[in-house]
Image (tube, rainbow, N blue to C red):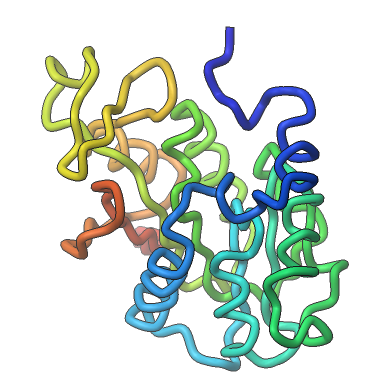
Length: 224
């Protein structure tokens, strides 16, 4: 039985109807959106680049990235297109800068219709809601974007295998788990998944809401 509320029938429709399109993506709306923009700009994102916002929700990042990027340079995916469209209606200061066709429903990380122009991608507070296989799938399928310079993503970590096998309290107080959401991983898990899918990862020291850990993935150099 799934413990993931996002998978419940009618979850997004009910949230949108109740005006809770912000709350259902995890709270700390302005703080988290600002942090996402900060880490992207620190990673080199400039207005002429093309950004893929994976698990974009109601455009918590999008409402800040769309004004920063050149028109047409922001693309987003989420398990629910309806929640992204709610963000488009309610959160964008200039909605004409973002074609709704660039908001793509994609629960399986297959990235349908995303252009090869993508240079940066981010999945912020996405994988803590999903089993580890989804991170592997995302890393695998992102290989198709040959111009992708960097993929930023967040996870919860447990310090060792013993503590990973039981509920673990994160620095910000969130209790995470190994076989139900919110999920935690081992640092070794992240490094292994990256390596076997053709990426190398770096862990960043930036402190994120709820104790999440930020990683950046770059394409593995070709062996001679």
